[in-house]
Length: 322
Image (tube, rainbow, N blue to C red):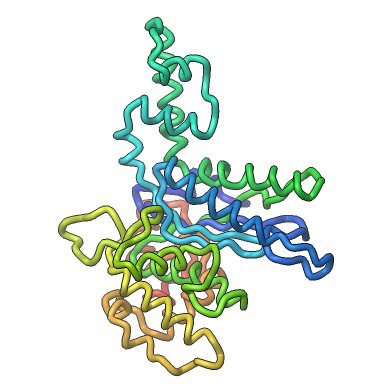
């Protein structure tokens, strides 16, 4: 029996999660249906635009994403501390960009004079909205439902478009985060719909690589902030150039005509993570096949098990990332 989402997401253990949504119908999310010849490629733009829009509304950052023909991948970072620091006006501004809210919340947002009892009701509503705006399940709901409605309207049908539950995996440490991000960013290359990471349409790696040429980072993606753990900056504790190189090298070895041409063990980022090149290739190219609810190195898994007594994490991923 699937575990409740509230039991799968533990921000005290990690703010990073890998989420996957898949279609239930044979009809494509995107791409071209080889049976009917109909193209659904334009839907990629819907999804990417929605992902990036929601990242500006929720207190959830986008580390990586890839929109495929019948599913999508996201690596998310939940910043619940940011949401707790929002004022009531800020919470309502964000929520009203998604939903109308209540009559009272609309009045409060406009600055209308209101009786005390109405302000109390507004504060209660804002507390609920604040929690939702840092909740992965609400993020995925706000992403998937509008896309399903648009696709059903275009397909002239009704019923489910997505599987009932999106899949989520907790990423417990730096090794699992980078491995999962690389796996997501290389999805189009493994599927044969792109030749290089920077040409992978509707992916985070293309967006990062595009602005990296100008010496800057994408403003809509969670940034790489280098290796300064002492300062505790808000971002991924590796250099963007290191990550781009790692993805490029991994992608080259995945291609059969390039196998063995580059030794991944030469990558400084793998040395810092303490991951063997063979183990890296196994996890970065077959992430879903080898992992389930939580992913991390042996010590991270042990810490998670101690804090979550009922958790039964996949043990094979420990060996792969050890």
